[in-house]
View 1 (cartoon, one colour):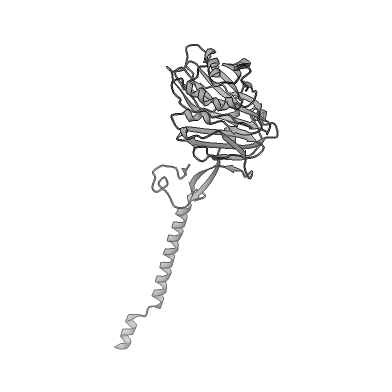
View 2: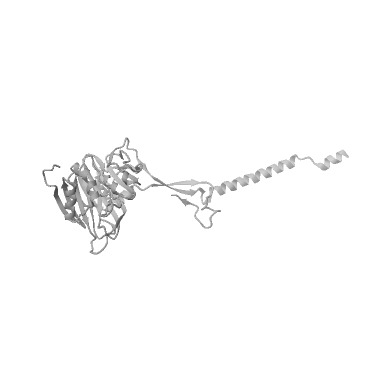
Amino acid sequence: MLLLLAVQLVSLARPAYACGCGAMVVDPKTTMAVDRETSAVRWDGRTEQIVMSLTVAGNARDAAWIMPVPHRATVELGDSALFDDLAALTEPADKKRTYFWPRGGDWPFARGESDGAGAPMPGAGGPQVSVVGRERLGPFDVARLTATDPDALRGWLKTNGFRLPAALAAELRPYVAQHWEYVAIRLAPAERNTYLNGTLDPLRLSFASDRLIYAMRLSRLAKTSQSLGLYVLAPHRMEPRGAIGGSAPEVFFAGRIKPKGASLRDLTGAGGAYLTAIDQQFPHPERITSDHELRRAATDTPYQRVRYTYVLMRVGDVPAWVLAAGGGLALLVVALVVRRRRRRRGMPSHEGAGARLT
């Protein structure tokens, strides 16, 4: 399966932030920042489904995405509740740890504070660009395209309002050479003369795929560090083959899940799936060497983060250290008293000894 998320947010003047939904372009006189990107992918060995959602901020009144996909894609609106379900499933487990001696927030060091201290991602013969579908989905104008030439693709997109910088057209050449298709999406606020701000409606793409590839090559255009976060729903635990120029990918959740919410059940089916949640940082995006290829891990070992809360050990309502200290002090006092009494009983009388000597 070919997983095509988290590539590059690009402005017409210069690249900016990566987002998990392809290359984003806005008017060069405006700005747009992706405050949060959340993407989920379901792969069963034959078909890939991608659900993506962005939270954006800036002064752009419209924007566009261009996403390469390996096969003919269908596009529909997604359900934002999916990400709430996934976030709840991957929350750290809460556990408590106790400590014996008082700390800075405990009596007698604190005044009126709590005893507990919480501690703590084609061939050249046909037409160069073909439109295989176009539809309106909520606020989105969606065009599904094929292309045999990246410059022709850029020209068609520009003619139809999807203007792309020349650097991005060059980065699309490998996808054109592999005969991939493209989804072009243009969006604008529901009300005229307002900015694109907040969380955008999620989109859901589906297409045939027999490998799990995570397209990252467009992110080489970025001028700032990039962050990748991904939920992968597959038959088994998945892992990237390599770091492709970034930090080591970090798994923050792995385990077989049974969906409870309707949105997640719609994506995985009633039987559920194995969920692998991955984070990765790219402090130098120009060093990205290729797309991610994800494969089955050697084992399906589950993993979940743990969030510890540290609390002072108590016996009832009394701190254990107070009881221990009090008990120790009492034992010491008893030992001293016993010792003193024994010494008195074994001590000879000085007056009697003097009388006999006299």
